[in-house]
Length: 327
Image 1: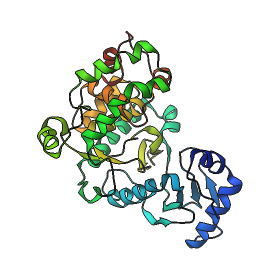
Image 2 (image 1 turned 180 degrees about the horizontal axis):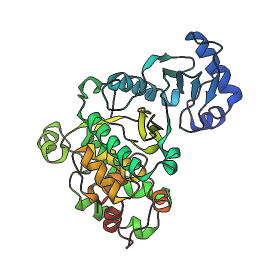
Image 3 (image 1 turned 120 degrees about the horizontal axis):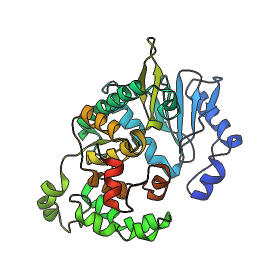
Image 4 (image 1 turned 30 degrees about the vertical axis):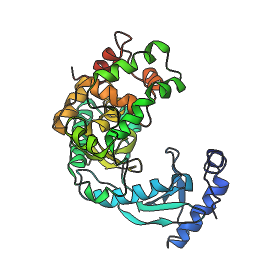
């Protein structure tokens, strides 16, 4: 019952339209044995997602993002029960109609930490950040080999090299002022291991791997308050109750996950970042994290500059320390 969505134009016309989406979601639920259960669409998120009653969540992926549906299901199955906080349990996943895919999963308790944060007392905030650091450490410690065939990018160094080649134009398209743009090439040149020129042969890649490659891990890539759930415990203290949204997961450098940590979890607060990295068990050099910020798939430096505290000087070096320093 859902029409094809393979282009941006089709996405914009169909995905937001509940008159089209809801009957399709209801039809799929009926096929999955949960007919007649109330459907409540979540307002946030790039994909259409519905609460199915009080216990389940249905996430839909149009043909234009069908691979993300496979990633979500595979990673959720891999991490379930293996992290310090809960992740959704997959009940069913697969193909629907016209290229659509779906994941039917358990619904986690709690609310988005992003929305809850203003009500969370300071001591609880620190404990939540520490728990988040331990959670990310556990994710990065998992064996990612079973997912190698399902997750990208495959050659991490080549991926970073491609991102580096387009770094300036990517930020220019987002209207970053010229005085920032002109700093990017020299800044990236000065940070080792973030997108050196892709090797032209397998032999050259193998020779480069120890210097440029480093450790690889299963990455969430959007480890942020918006994807963490929290709720007050019976004693009144806030606790993390869940981590979700694994559709953009990758296998790569653990430092890449700290982009979202610094921007969206600790939000340029050096004290909170110090607590997070202490719980995680490792800290990363601020300039390296800003370099990964510039290379991130969803990088939008102008938006971050609007939302986070301004650095004392309009330089990338000052910005790195201001957002990713630990005081």
